[in-house]
Image (cartoon, rainbow, N blue to C red; front, top):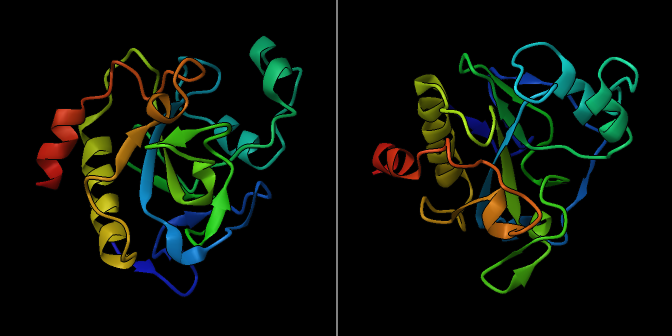
Length: 182
């Protein structure tokens, strides 16, 4: 996996531009990777609902949950699907709107200095082998491309927004990821 640091995009990965992004206060300050999980509708996989959420096209009337979230302005840099397919929504040099109100090691506003990676899944179900493999490969590529990142600066959404967020949840195996990154 290779990242073009000029464009901030992963080469040979589908790019779907999200409007829910803006300039970072300091492009060179990226030093944290935040791991999330998402499924739309909750507990269902596949389909285009996540892309529609990240591009402000989620219809309110298709599912009761969508009526609650369809006006949210959110995004992530990358989504890793259950089958291992990657989709990129925001170039890495831009700020994706993935963390919300957040704090990591006494530093607030994590969107300013983090990369948000979504795994298609739920807080309480296991993730697929290929998702861990792709996540580890992506983290390796990010580590090689961005000087302040390293493989130990990883957090879950629940770590940066405790009490507000629970993902990636109990179904995510941090030890397994660390083993793949070793």
